[in-house]
Length: 342
Image (tube, rainbow, N blue to C red; front, side, top):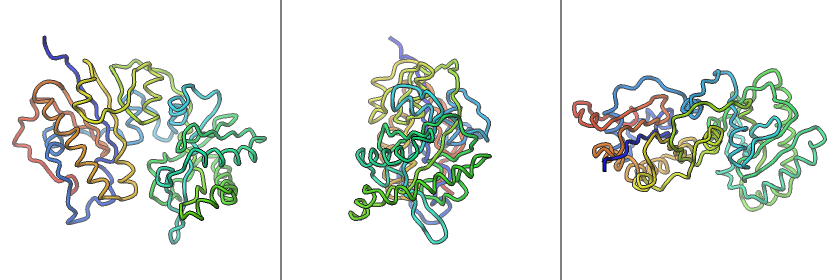
């Protein structure tokens, strides 16, 4: 019996690209010879999609750069099992910390918010704003949604691009922006007085003192797809898969487990673990994760390419490029490996 042909598109934002330590001389790199081989053996890659565009471009969507993507509408489907009945945008709980002359954002994963804390803050918001047609919902502790009567005229910045950074240049833009800036300020005052935050501060934990509004794009239609299956923990990617009728599953622990489960055809697998450590400039956590991916994913995938178990690997490492490698490409020994950052 012959080997069933299959290929893998592997999307790992935070692996390369605008890392906080890039260009810093003398920093040790994680030991990852298989990853470096994949990057070196791929034909010289053209520019591809940006990190925020990539999930949509992988499914064949070409949305205007200035237009908000429907992240909220899609991830709400993944989190609740249904599409929102009216306009919705992400309203994720965050901690804003004053740092000299700026406000730096830390997301709910950093703040370790619990489901009961989320429920209390959501109830406080809805008690104040329910009569204005706004309804906050927290189907998960870290992903919240704001339902409103109509789609806002708004351009927003995805939370992943603001974590660990000054929020000033990333605040909502557009004709309705002043109203949203005012709402953010009001929410900060509302949350400041809640018992949840008094308890957190007494325990030495960061307060949940604001909401980050983003992903306010309108719904999109399903498109013809060639994916056999999608493997992901990303709620937006899950929503795209469900919209387009593609089976999705959690990411296996390693490439060997994936190979045992994946049938013939094209597969998309996304790993978003590195975004967190990259956003907060945690080089130790990032390096440890890359070393683990080397052992669990990159080295086994190199072997799978050589043996023909995988016909093609298309790697999206978050630097705006696509690295496509077939088994025969691994013999391009004249193409030397390079540092991950230089």
